[in-house]
Length: 77
Image (cartoon, rainbow, N blue to C red):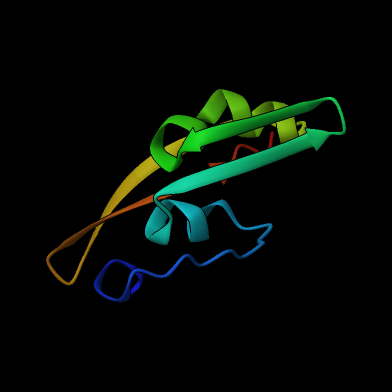
């Protein structure tokens, strides 16, 4: 919709899957002095999210209804 109408959509989420599925760009805000901004796929990495949330993360690829779905999940030990 944003490309078709030339709109910019800004939203905030604490769920990495939201950005992975719908965003062209993402901003990770660690604190006032540390942020990461860029293409969602480049910013939403296992390493970056692990540092942000303080827990190891793993990117997983699943199939659903003939579609490829990517998710980032925490690795609890």
